[in-house]
Length: 434
Image 1 (cartoon, rainbow, N blue to C red):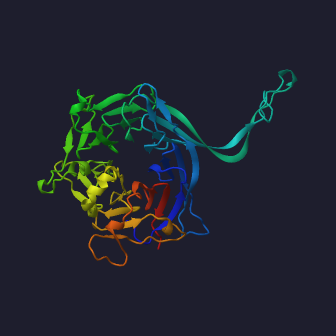
Image 2 (tube, rainbow, N blue to C red):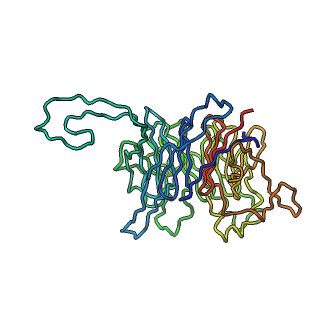
Image 3 (cartoon, rainbow, N blue to C red):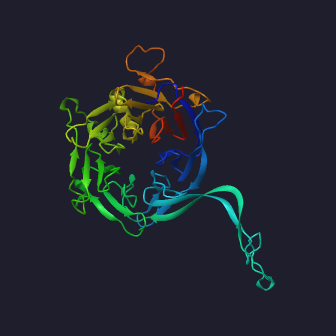
């Protein structure tokens, strides 16, 4: 797990707020999406022989506009260009592929490099203009000439018109041929080669919408079993489904829910129990869920309670009334595993993010700030004081800035490198080499 001697690199997005962060399967590329519909991809540079103490940094590799604002004329509804989720596909050749989605439309993008261009065409001159056919007296064989490296992003598939409600999740299946997309009430299964139809595998919409008691908040495919997926709800429950059992997976195979303590019941209990993110471990044995105040790790073989519970910011329990009034209580925090499933990470307020070591049960609070983004800067653990008297390095819970929040985080699949999105800033931290 990260210690206080982590080094940090900072990239500033002045235009828009970052809405998703995702490493690809190798960790070589890191993609971010923002509220302006843009996707920015960073590439991990190779280690420098002259400075071996520094691991390769991440530099901008490609930037492209993924989604544009649209208008639904039938419902008189504006469709934002904001990128809700990005998911990489496993690399099969020299090109990279990723899925990106806004509220309604999913796109498959191909990211490829070009460092050669063809010259010596018969029907066109060197500037691309058509030549007079009557003046062509001989045939030429076009040749490939070297050129400056160019990274091209081209849309290969557009998956649209399948969701009535806002898409909150996309997840690539382990068969690498299908993926699922989820909105508030339905989950669809797509084939990556077929854009004009999808299969509805979960539908929780009641016949009478007044009887609606919960919505789908997140969904993910199992990392190894292509027939298994989970989805979480706003009532704090998780359902594991097996697509081999039935075409429509309204009946779950397993149901995960922690019994509520009646003594701690309050007006806010239902709101803070809503699950904002669910992630399978890389091994597929566990899954992790994030609610408003905590992160829970579940064993897929035990449904009645989580095997681990980590309090992210329990000190906010006394502030729930004011958090409800300023709508912060509805913030959707994400969570992620490290490559070996031994540590987990999630965000908090005041640009704090929390990391928990599952083996030692130690935890650490770090801050993503512009002050700590100087070259070779090291991060210092932060602590929040809840009592009247606070120590020198502590910050009072009353001084926390709730406008600064870490909602989106990602962990490199193989190394101790993490990416943290703080509103319109992207911070990349890496563990220091001793």
